Image (cartoon, rainbow, N blue to C red; front, top):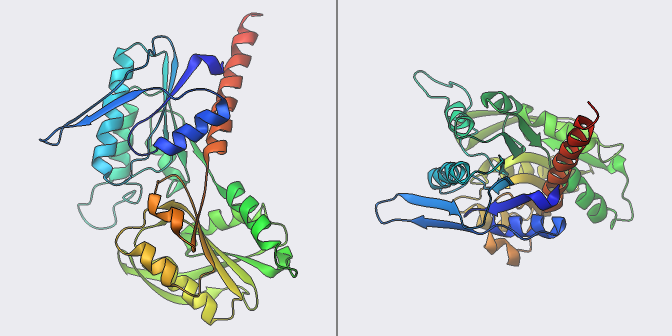
Length: 324
């Protein structure tokens, strides 16, 4: 039941949490987070949570280690305050890119962080567009990995239908590398008659990409590049530039997690070969509000619907138990 839940934000997603609560017509819980001079922090609920289901919304984005510790400490506080059940919603999961041993003696940090949250006492974790789907298996509790593809598709259909010549056949959904093919297929499923293109590239070192080929027809088409993360922006912009040089009519970029470190924002706004960069609010950037190139679309309704779905399923189980 919606009235038996309470939703908290910590330090990373205050605006997103408020929007989710607005959709659910409930007030967000009150939390206290303090950082001390020696680098330690404390986080705890100020609202009464005894016997309630607690949802915590916190992206483990920059500063990543602080966000992780805030989450773990807050979860511990909720357990000690006798919360009935704790669900952690991590719109962005930090350390996700360290998901395998790429060279000798490297750690698998994505698994280590997953273990921390598994052992913290949460019952369920909800994520948005994990860097690789197999990270779900790193957790010892159920993980719902959601996708913003429908949110992107809805915006793109409204945006592109402004063009008189718009048809699905005029659009190419572009995976910036082979690992992003599942995102391209997912987005294409919501925009009929589009074709899928993949950029073949190599990574000699982190944040550096060498593009070797574009596989698929892009000539005269509106290209929509879709990926999970933009960090410094160099890789995605290099791909967008190649698409434009090889005959794309326009290039749009869809990105779930806008890290935008360094000069990424300035690079994106200066790229005249990109019509628009569409990102979600898994990571909050106040500076995007005045940008003419970067469009932020919210996943708040999607998260609210997920919470409602979980609660309605719980209600069904309770009702069924009465007749056993």
